[in-house]
Length: 199
Image 1 (tube, rainbow, N blue to C red):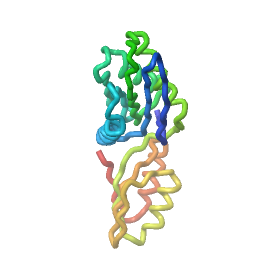
Image 2: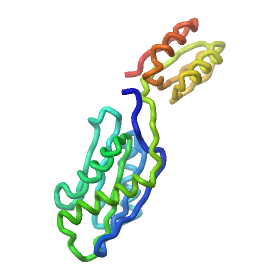
Image 3: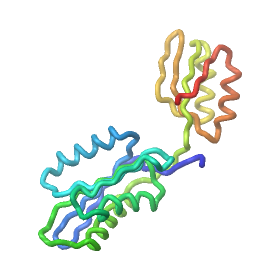
C-alpha cells in the first residue's frame, strides 16, 4: 500500500431526531494531542451538551484508534462513528458528535441511526484527499549542496518537516514510499551527505 485517504479540512453537520440535536465535527489529526485539543475545545464550546461522543483513527496501519460513547448506551455512539470513518477507509481523522437532549428517549436503534447519520453527513461535506505514505529521514550536508538537495526533495514530492540552514544544514523529510529507492539513489550521489532513517 503506497497511499492512504484522509481529510484536509474540518467538516460540520447537524442531524435532528425527536427534539435531540446531534452536531458532528470532523477534524484532521496526526497525534493524540491534536485529538485532546479538539475535544477540549468542543466541550468548552458546548458546555450544556449532554454527550460528546467520538472516534478517531490515527496512522495508516489501522492499529491506533479509540471510541467513546460518553455515557450513551454501549455501542450506540463511538462504534457507529468509527464505522462511518472506516467505511470511507479514512485515517488521521477525528469525529466528535455533540448531543443536545430533546426530552424524548430515542432507544438503542434511534441512537445508532442518529450517530451514524450525523457522522455520515459530516464526512460528506469534508474534502477527502489521497496522500502518499512517507518514510522519514534526516539529511545532514554542507551549505553548498543545498540546491542539489532541494532539487531532489522537490523532484520526488518529499515533505519537509524541519529545515535548519547554516554552514552545516539539517533537514527532516518524508519521502514517498513508492519513490524511496530512486530518491535514496539520488541522495547517494551527493558528496558528504549523511542520510539516516528516523525510527
